[in-house]
Length: 227
Length: 409
Image 1 (cartoon, helix red, strand yellow):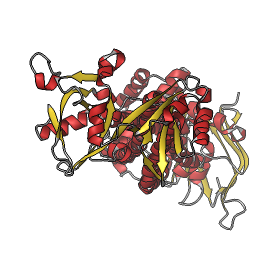
Image 2 (tube, one colour):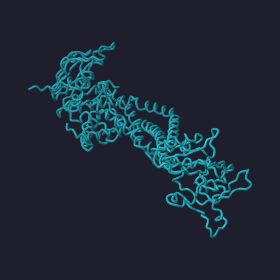
Image 3 (tube, helix red, strand yellow):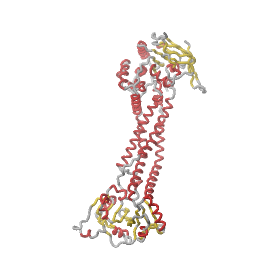
Image 4 (cartoon, chains in turn blue, green):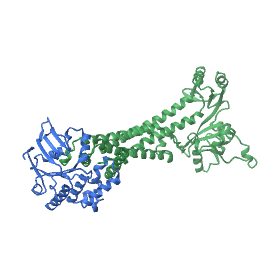
């Protein structure tokens, strides 16, 4: 029985299609990721890593090709169903964390649960578990703008996990962290892998893609998969 | 993931909208203040116009069916008593009354009083009795002089009373003109109650014979005539007939007076609104600018919400609630402030524009008369455009690919 959880088939993404500034960020990219694995997508800046991650993370639709998550062709789904699939199965950690500055740690973490109609009490309960897990309980009511970079990243991870998503996508997680914080991040990732999460990370940092816990490394260059 | 009920979802969205409003406190407080000022200004004008028109319509129901004046050389002159029997003969006319009235200018106070002559004994009967605060009623046993001069008594409006009090004449007043040999003293036996102030404020109601003396009106002449017509359908016809039989007589029906009041107040309302138009327009532009232009921070927030899985309709719901809460609170506050300003504080500054014409401004209490149509109009011109200017740009931002957030917008 196949253990495949994420698959892209000849995926192409072209921005500004038909305009003078048209650019193809990803071209005919195909990859397969098994459930419970830790996978790194490496490549230099501007190679198309983030675009491919966006396609897998249901942030945008491919111009051509197919993205299949948990056996469902998400690239063909209408926006509402694609969002539902995203909320239920995918957690995203953005390169710049993308937290809402004026809000508290707790409020940022529970954001994905608001459209689900989950009560504040239940939201708080779920968030408290993650705050403990990521050593943020003492920062619960702090505004995220008052946190350090490492703490902000932990908030972003907690937010990505609040909906119990099985797939975690992280875009250049070490870009704004020093080596100690990168190592802390990898410790969290290992824990998540042990708990059964499938993790896909984009990075050009050897500390990440050479880490022993990594199961598979894909390489992308100029929008095309080279390994 | 387990989803909650629709109700819980809406509650979450409203909670989030409130939080969002509070996070952008300074911008929203500015919009709130401008909004309240706008709604307050427009509501105040609509309230005072509605209330005054309504008040005039109610009180003008007591106006005569037809007032007859005599015009000579293009100006109003006294009506001769010989017209009475002729008008009484017209079919449909129930009775014709004579009236004695005019103005008295008191130079020392620079005030113009309206003088009206009538049989004051009538005011002591029935419903009329209730509209007068009786005072200084001369007791014939104690005061032979006063009781011997029943033609020289008067009842005055509250505004006149206040002015006369300043010159210690609130108990008795001396009418005097330079051409007279001596002044004519009048005893003040009562003041009109405040409910009637819109009509009575500058009035002096004198016993008819005394009024004739003050107004220097010859015995067989009157200021005008009042015609009573029991059938309202016939009023216009009879007025036309009077004018046809006596071309020198001018007739004014109650409906014409009511129309004049309504026109005057509506004209004043339009004038004040037009004067405010520039300010209103400037405020609207400011609100539009503040509300419609999403800041980079707001655009980023919408991008984040979309990127973590919020649907476009949920983002729009948040913006809708934000707009509704802000404009709803502002409109309500503006309307309530206008209500308090017009009906509790008696519209200082605005009332003079609408009701004043002499130095004696009526200080009557405006009776609340809030037409639901006004409220609907105010809400329509405030809440609806505001919702449009807030939701539309949010929609534009929300339909953008959330992928943009990946590129650090």
